[in-house]
Image 1: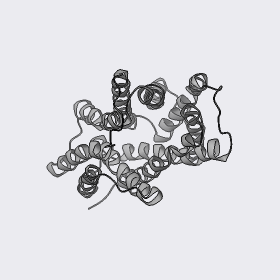
Image 2 (image 1 turned 45 degrees about the vertical axis):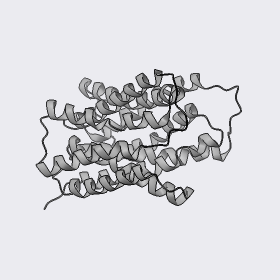
Image 3 (image 1 turned 90 degrees about the vertical axis):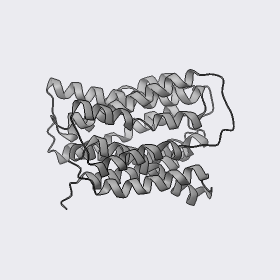
Image 4 (image 1 turned 90 degrees about the horizontal axis):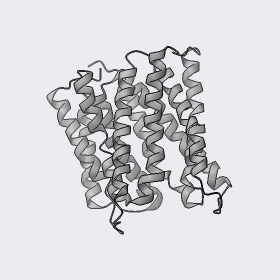
Length: 291
């Protein structure tokens, strides 16, 4: 059966996102605040953006519709990340926040089915459902603390909506503009929000400016930046209702496996169940026609 490039791009995304997820906390543990990690991330986006533009022979879509799409995609993505670190995690337990956020493909699927008229076969829907079921299992964390401050729920829902809508906009924009232009605007909007992250940083605290701070953050965040580019290409060639749950289900599996190797921490049985569901889903969706 003829395959579209969406599967290669989707698996590349899950590989880089999975590795990124396993390493993301290292700079923060070394004394480099999350707000500055965001700034480093926004800078790393420049590298794949230049690569993409060179691939497009430096041709950028600058019509009004493309700029609006680019702004919508960029601000929902980068804005969601700012809200996650400066709002949700600050006020609530991660073991409740991440299962909610990781279900963002539900929003993407609903919007894609309603507005883009995307459809999948019965086998494809089984894979999608298994992926969605796997995500909260993979996001499980043992509850050591329970917060009575429920502001985290509002922030978590905002990130959930933002990232679900962003994925839909990426797929929709790919129909009217080049993927390279989409990523360029993602890079620009990410940089535009950096001053807000700097303003929110408590510079009175001790900050690690050595390699384990910004240096390590750079090498880790470049993984996310490359994954962000490849997921744009995955949405370009594949259906959002397939790409979104596939990448959101498989990346955590890789994160768990890599974390197990690096930190020698055996996953909870709930996570093992999620890994099994995600692997089954992967095989099903890999043979689903992507476009």
